[in-house]
Amino acid sequence: MKEVQDKFLRWKGFWYLLTRDREQTLLKHFFHHPLVYGWRALRSYVLRRPYIKDENRYLYNVSSFQDITSLLARKDSYLILGISYCQKPLDCPCGRFNTNCIHEDKNEICKNCFIKGAYDKFPKDRGEFIVLTTVHYIANKILNIMYSNPNKKCVFAMCACPLSLEMFSDWGNVIAMPGIGLSLCGPVCSSMRAFKLAEVGVKPLKTELKSSSEIALDQILEILK
Ligand code: SF4
Ligand code: SF4
View 1 (tube, rainbow, N blue to C red):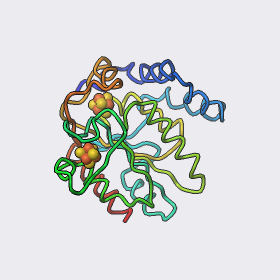
View 2: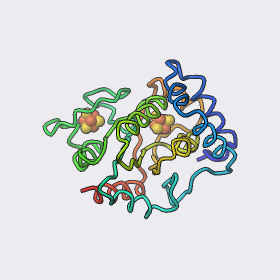
View 3: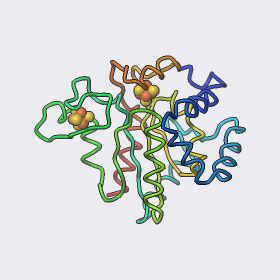
């Protein structure tokens, strides 16, 4: 995977976030705390690598996977778990490029779907389970959840391809939220062109979590029980 070999990838991600923010929702969030967000962004973008890589897991604002599990063991923790739409089966009854998921017990496609498995294990009172589409949707959703839960210790876990995890790796530092990126494999987007097509729903193949990421997700869900 060529991901991290493009040293301008994070700046391309920054430019993409800025210029495609059509409803200016991210800009509005930014102007809630311009100095804080501005300073954090500056500090993050000058770093050579704004996260820690541990196997296929990307760690943001923590120094080890153990830190993530310790945070989630706290009763006031709140997990924002994001699953990418590209993980949906090709014949998903909800369609693919949307945030819907019916996770129906009787539906033959759902029964064999990884997303239903994760949804069933997810303790609904300990966080939010979301299917992700575009990067602007993800960013807004995380900020809204964070602002709606001021008394909780929010932690994010996002399933995404190495390209997106690298490209938007500064985002975790800007919001100063601990989190983990769980890496996808299979026919993932590996170029800006593929990424931009996926952002408008052109993603004809299905991705899946790397086995080490799947194990990490299982451990995370186990702790939340
Ligand atoms: S569980 Fe899987 S197949 Fe069923 S609606 Fe959700 S994503 Fe689609
Ligand atoms: S950029 Fe492509 S491979 Fe990566 S998470 Fe989005 S749809 Fe999936």
